[in-house]
Structure formats: structure tokens, C-alpha cells
Image 1 (tube, protein in one colour):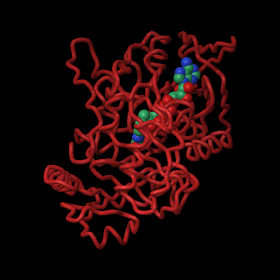
Image 2 (image 1 turned 180 degrees about the horizontal axis):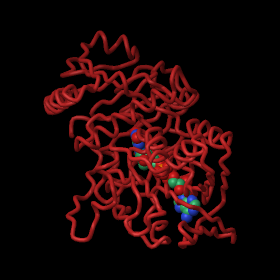
Image 3 (image 1 turned 90 degrees about the vertical axis):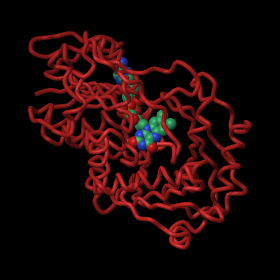
Length: 385
Ligand SMILES: Cc1cc2nc3c(=O)[nH]c(=O)nc-3n(C[C@H](O)[C@H](O)[C@H](O)COP(=O)(O)OP(=O)(O)OC[C@H]3O[C@@H](n4cnc5c(N)ncnc54)[C@H](O)[C@@H]3O)c2cc1C
């Protein structure tokens, strides 16, 4: 059996490694270089916190578990330090309390902390004088997505996968019981199955194969498909886990840098206009950082980016065969960092003829003509879910 995987982002590379390690012949076709899509602009926090409905929560909780299993006793891309969430006002407290109750019902680990324990965990934290509630989610954490990609690409190659970068897919046609895939430079590849993991380009790839896969695309600043990320210069902070407050999400990034996200500031995010690192917007991230952590007074923003989410039309994961073409398997998802190791295993199983019950609620058949679609919800700040 020969499988072509289109897209070498975190999802495609995980699937390629899974298939190759199961003994399948795999060819990956990537239009640019690996990781240059959404994977390079991700906050990369793995979690199932606040993910709804229950089947999407279950999928993400299995994704968190799959990260721990893949990294086992440690991996250079894996930072399982947990997530500390601080509620500073009554509304956030109420939301956090109801989320904790719901998560506990599902068996999702969460601990309630007082200020002293929070400060033991994050000594640099500037807690509000009277925090309304502090919760710790010990199974969550963050990854360095490009380091994860390197690891999985090496595993895929070691298991025999061929990885072609600068291989822009421009045509997909039925051929025998499978398909022929053509790239812009005139190469042609025959396969029994084509897996598209082309992120926010999925709709175009599916259309090449005569299939329909509805995704939400950027239409106006601040919609659900876009969000800023700010990276600081190296700072002398000892932060080693994800911290979320009502005004800022902050986590460590490479070489002493910090990665900042503030979902309310995303209201102006526009991929066609990225503010420079010395803009008023960058200064606002720094103000919030100084409010949240000691030792960040000298921090500067080195890089501000607008990330573009992979957003299926109803906000939920798509994973399954195309309705129109049985040889085409489609994967497209937000929360792709959380889900990548799980999808690597689950899609491998299904492409090889098995069935993964966790994916049952995420088939393309839900978009059948006449189906009512709910637009994807905009990402919420802690306390707003
Ligand atoms: C601001 C922001 C914050 C986020 N935070 C989190 C988070 O905290 N936790 C989490 O789990 N997720 C998060 N996400 C989502 C997560 O980053 C994505 O779901 C994930 O990176 C998607 O990976 P992917 O492999 O599907 O897509 P991509 O990384 O975009 O990969 C798709 C690849 O397909 C290639 N391709 C496209 N068209 C073609 C073609 N015609 N021929 C060949 N190749 C092609 C592209 O070049 C690209 O490399 C965030 C996203 C954003 C934008």
C-alpha cells in the first residue's frame, strides 16, 4: 500500500510517522518547507480545558494523554509543567468553578490552590492581592512545535518515508482504485490512499480531488480564524509552565524567551497588517507581562505575528474519508497541536482499515447538504467560556 500525505505541518508529519512506522510506504508532499503553515504560529498549549461538546473534550483529553505517552520520560519538544489559571474577578471565579466541576466529572485532573502553593509553583508570579480562585491543571503543558516536527520527520524518514518539500500539489485525479497526484514542477505520484493534512488550505486540496470540505476563512479583523502571538527577548524569568490570567496567557519559549497571547487583543488581528515589535500593541503585551510576572521589567517584544487558525466551518475537528472519493482521507483541525500525536495513531489505524471510535463524531458526513452549521466560536479568554 502506498499513501501520499499532503502537508508537512504538525498533523501531516504525525500521520506520516505513524503510517511509516506501521510498515506502510509513505510519501509526504509539502508546498514549502515543513512547519511553515499554522504550526509555526501556535501557542502550542496541549489541553482539553474548556473544550466542548463532550466528544470534542474526549478527543482532546485523549490528545493530552497521547502527548505524555509519546514523550514518555522526556523529549526535547515536551514541557509537561501543567497550567496555572488565576481568576481575579467574580465572573471568572464562577466560570472557573463550574468548569472545574465539569472537568472533575470527566476525570480530568485539576487541583485548587491557595496563593502560597501558586507561588511555590511559579515564584515570579505577581498574584492579585486577593485572587478569587487559583486552579492547577497538572496534565497540561506546552510543546515547541518545530522541535516536535523535527523529531517526527526524523522518525518518518527512519521508517522509510519520502519527504518532498517545495512540492506544491496542483492536481489530484482518480487512477485505478486510488489516485494520481501532480505537483507544480510536473512530477506525478500514484497512491492507493491520499491523506490531506493541508491545514487552512484543505478546502482547495479537497476541491482538486472533487470533494467538498467546508472551512472558515479570514473575513474580518478579529474573527475566529486569526490571533496574535508576541515573543519577548530572552528574560531572566524562571517560568517553566503555562500561566493564564484574565489579561494574559504566558509560557516559556526557546532560549529564555516568553510567548504571550491575549485573546481580547485579537479583536484587531489581521493577517494583512502585522504591527511592528515597537508598536503600541506590543507595548500593551509588555504592560500585561509586567503585571503578571516579576523580573520582566526589561522585556521587549522581538516578534509579533498574526497566526491563522485551521478552522473547520463548525469549529470542530474533521477526520475521515471523503464522502465523494473513498481514496481521500481528510484531516483538518484547530487544536492540532493538542491532537497531533493522537491523530498520528488514530488516522494510521483508519487508513489501514481499522476504526477509531474517538473520531466518530468528526466525520465529513455532518456537513451534508441541508445540515445546519453553527459558526465556530471565537476563542475565549479564561473565565469567558
Ligand atoms: C494564534 C494560534 C494559537 C494556537 N494555539 C494553539 C494551542 O495553544 N494549542 C493547540 O492545540 N493548538 C493551537 N493552535 C492551533 C494549531 O497550531 C493548529 O491546529 C495546527 O498547527 C495545525 O497544523 P496542521 O498540520 O493541520 O496545519 P499546518 O501547520 O498549516 O500545515 C499544513 C501544511 O500543508 C501545506 N500545504 C498546503 N497546501 C498545499 C499544497 N497544495 N501542496 C502541498 N502542501 C500544501 C502547507 O504549506 C502547510 O505546511 C493555535 C493556532 C493559532 C493560529
